[in-house]
Image (cartoon, rainbow, N blue to C red):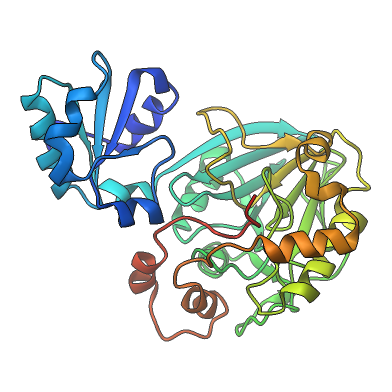
Length: 364
């Protein structure tokens, strides 16, 4: 990394102080439109010399491109104009694998929310006494092994809430590395050995801790979508319910039928719970505010009032969900095949293909 580059760790800290920061993305408009860092503005490299005359003074300018080369050129242009400019080391490629985490105590359990910031992925380590489970681990499975070691936890079970279409799952690799039991919903077409999910499955963590995580089927986003309940404190909703929308029902090419299932899952499995339940989804979109040290979650009661779709009748919900489907996740069919154990591509090849935004929510 060059002396005038900014590391991803430092960059994540800067994002908490947006008034001191100006994000300058020098990629071409079509690249920017496909995927960008929230708050970044697009100034293509060829136009930058003229555009930068209107940049704010007295703030840190961070220059962004795909991997860093164009950003280096852009930073030189900005410095020549008298601006303070640094290059985001690794560019959007590094942003796609940038992580942070937040720890909290809920219902007698330690919950560690692992956030893949550039992909909008959320995963969870839930522990009590010396036992732990992991929900929706990303491909960098070593991260969860390190977290367990840091907190003196032994991972007993690994879960995916559903067959993921927008990013690589690390569930199989994590279970193999730790000897944990891999538990999946057989209603999704996995093609490798696992322990099948059963409705009402309950995992007790620690002999002397009265704490359990229970699993309940919630089809709609996929046929095998599952939500996990942590006592009377929290619900891990996967792609069934997000903080800004609900899961898209169309990836299996049965949008209307799956939208009906999603409505039933929300109204029979999630919405009957009390307002104080904290909702922990598997993804977040650009409209969700993210800050270091603050968990990405909201009370169920708050979502009842902020998400109008939750108050619709079933027919109106289905009409809305089908009408507001956005572009599908990039390379999603190959990613699904890999996560299902049906792909000949290896993870190294696919990690480049999965870079980009998550598109698993119904558009607002």
